[in-house]
Structure formats: C-alpha cells, structure tokens
Length: 428
Ligand code: EPU
Image (cartoon, rainbow, N blue to C red; front, side, top):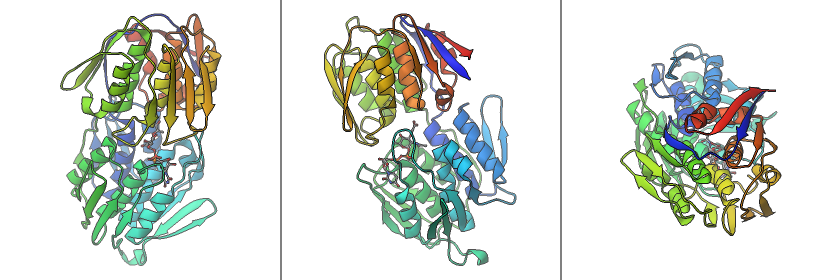
C-alpha cells in the first residue's frame, strides 16, 4: 500500500493548474446513460473515482474510452444492465448517480443502498422522494432501491412532477442531480424546489442542455425541467475543481508560501477566500487564477461554519482546520452539513494539535508548531488536511492509506513536490 513521507518546513512556491471537478465529472459521466450517442468529456481528471465510475458504466454495458490525457467517452448504445451492486456502490457513494439516468431512460433501476460512511449517516431519502414525485414506483428490499415507471415494459416514460428536496442540513447535491437527470426524459414538466445551487449542479445542467435537455434555473434553488423525448451526444468540458483549488491555496497559506492556482473560477471560491482573508492572508485575483501571498506571522483565528454553496464548503473543512491548528488563538469550526466529519481531528492531535470536539463543532487552540508522526488518512479531504499539516510539521510525517487522496486529487504528491514540498510516495 502506498504512503507519503513528508518532511515539513519548506514553503510551497509556484503555480498549479486546477483539473476538472471530481464532483461534476462523476454525475456527468453517469448522464451518458441518458442517450445512445457518445458523451465526451475532454478534461476528465485522472482520479481513481473517475476510473471507478467508468468501470461501473462499463460493467453496466456502456462502451467506455479513456485517452492518455484523461479524456473520457461514454456511449450507452448496447444492452444496458440497469443494476448497480453493493460492491460497486460501497466502493464509491457517487455511484448512486446512475439511479436517475436509469429510471429516466429505461424506466427501471436497481441500485444498492449506499449505507453510512466514515463521516456519518448519509441518507438518500431525498433521491427516493424526488424520483417518486416524478412518478416512479419505489421499493426498498434486501438493501436495494428498486425503481420502476408503471408500464416501462411498453416504453412508458416518467410523467414528471413537482418536488421540494430540502433536508434539515440544506439541499442535497447528488439528490438534486439524480432527480434532474431522471426528469430530462419525463413526459411532462418537472420542478425541483430546494435544489442545490453548487456550481457542479450548474455544470450538470449545462451538459444536459447541450445534450438536448430543457432545463432552466441553474444556480438557483428552483430548477424547471421540460421533459424531452430523447437526448443526444455531446462534448462537454467540466468546470475546474474548486475544492482542489481551495486545498492548494490553503497548503500555500499553511506553509507560508506563495501559490498561484491557475485555470480556476475565482467566484466559486468566495467563501474560502473570505475565511483566509479573515485569517490574515492576501490574494491577487485574475480572471482565472488566484495567488495567495505569504504571511510572516501565524494565521489569525477564524470561526468557520460549513454551509451549502455559496457558503464555506464541508469539503474544505478539514483543510481549514489544519490551518487553524497553527493560528494565534482559538477558533471554532462547525460542520453543519456533516456534523460527524471529524476523522482528521484525532490524527491532527498526533501531530501536536490542540482540538476538542463539542457536538458538531471543533474548538481549536492554536499551537506554534507541529511535530511529524505517522498518521492515517480516513477519507479524501481528511487526507489532504494531513498532507498540509505534514508540510509544516517538524521532522517526518508519514501519511498512510493515501489511496483515499488519489480518489480526488490528481497526483498530489508530484504537484506538491513541484511546488517545493518535500514529499515522496513510498510503498510499505
Ligand atoms: N441528505 C439527506 N437526505 C438525502 C441526501 C442528503 O438528509 O437524501 C443530507 C446529508 O446527510 C447531508 C446533506 O443532506 O447532511 C447534504 O448531503 P448531499 O446529498 O448534498 O451530499 P452528497 O450529494 O452525497 C456531495 C459531494 C460530497 C460533498 C457533499 C456536500 C459528490 C459526489 N459528493 O455529496 O463530496 O461533501 O455533496 O457538499 O458530489 C468529497 O468530494 O469529498 C465529498 C464528500
């Protein structure tokens, strides 16, 4: 198994080009199931999660092609198996994104319930509620969601319908996407109220519209979908990964370096940049780049609460915590989206951090330095936080189980090394 050996202390300096967004490309590749023509994503990032979704689509009967540069093509023109098994969904929760397209195009789907994950219970009741509102009959049996459109054998399509998808924690991103994808091929009009406003949802809408769908309201909490009979193929470049960009900016901040993230959309990062500004960092911002300037002193403490977009993203919570560990004072981080997403906390303690957990909040008393130790990555973003901490800790930090980080960061070790970080990928 691969691990990272990191020797902390060197500021990161230089530029890093941001890749296509993981959380946009996974549902967008699943949207390939909505048509028998080819869907081509020229800038699909080279991540293990992308490999996983392509493997699932291939197992379901799609033709899948991958270029050396990552470009991916999906064509669902053969016999399609409308089923995703426990093993496939367990490996990656985003596999649930095949549910909506299957129901929309084939009128049938059998997809394993994902179950919990390291950061708590992650229900999918809204995906089910939404598909039911569009007219699917849903049963839950033996750990599977089975959905069918009455009369699917005779080619009946979903009627379409109106639904509110909000949860107590806010809108659901993949829930919105699943219902949206199913609604594109419905007989009539559908309306999603309480839709997620994340840029990745907007990107999916752009892709679906380029395939012939008729969706309005992207970026707002109300999506209106006029069903069409058929969708066609398309070429769609996905948006840059705002979480990858935010992670590199925070890595620049924690190491006292100057890092420029290129090929990003600065407006997608307004909340994280605001938090970093409150911590005393300065930026230069161009049309498609952001550069963070070094700060000689320790960061100022900042209280951060995660929220749905455009609020501070839960996917940058762990990385912000790594930074706050070194702040000059006490900060409070609260995760309202995933109140138990704190697996990184205990690992940061091993490096010398002082953090207490209180319900959905973590109280962080800043320390002046960290010292290297072996730590274990538990999920993708927690791993990124541990790499960041390792880059400033004195001595050597070994981050184990880095397969988590390969799910969502393309060759992070090589790119951090190019920025001057002393990091090596080794095999244990
Ligand atoms: N929720 C429900 N019922 C549902 C669905 C969600 O109560 O049916 C709750 C969740 O428990 C949570 C909140 O709603 O409290 C938001 O969850 P959401 O459904 O939006 O999460 P997701 O769609 O499963 C996506 C990203 C996650 C990211 C979250 C929140 C993808 C593939 N995943 O997950 O990304 O943390 O939105 O922004 O898009 C990551 O990239 O590391 C990652 C975990």
